[in-house]
Image 1 (cartoon, rainbow, N blue to C red):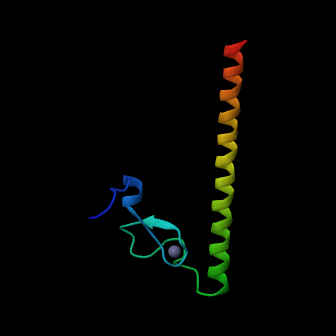
Image 2: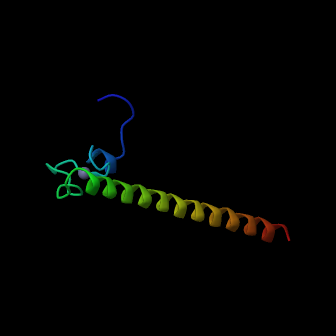
Length: 80
Ligand SMILES: [Zn+2]
């Protein structure tokens, strides 16, 4: 073992080199792309996942924005 200890959630999953999704370390084959053949089908699957990631990142930004807004509102209320 070297480097920083990883959070438990990550330690028990590994990243699939085909589809880049993480799956349980104990699984012998990636359950996400096991049934997908190489080529266009796999590429479309990966692209779909990238889109999902981008969308969840966008959602995270919205929550951050709302939290900042709430903090600002609290500050304004405490001043007045
Ligand atoms: Zn996979």
